Length: 167
Image 1 (cartoon, rainbow, N blue to C red):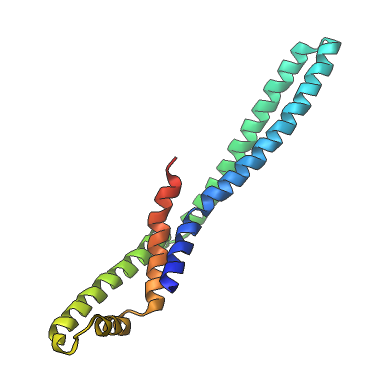
Image 2 (cartoon, one colour):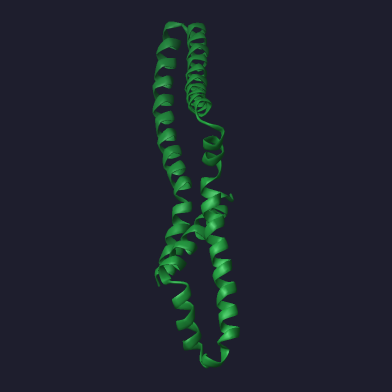
């Protein structure tokens, strides 16, 4: 039961970035609608006064400032990351890039090794196992429910995110 809940939770958590992106997009669109309404009011007021050329110049300046601000913000973030990684040793930089895949590989390798050892144990002690219940009891000794929940959460997160990414 815990592994089922963990799988569902892992799958839902893999979609969390898309949900947050949707909410941010919605907030951005509401903000843009407010700006558009204000811009329309400004255009009407300027059109009454005959300042249409001035309006176009202001629009161009506003767009340039917005583009510069976005570029500076992104550049500053990348420069900060680069500065941190320049001071770090090579193994720290490499470790930074491989942490999540390494943890996943370790747990999947653990699952494979446990399945192999369980199979070997069953072949060696097959005479003592007569029912499926005995087989399940033997496998629960080797592979606990907590480990299965953790593994299913990891796999659901990594492979469940593929469904969230499809449009």
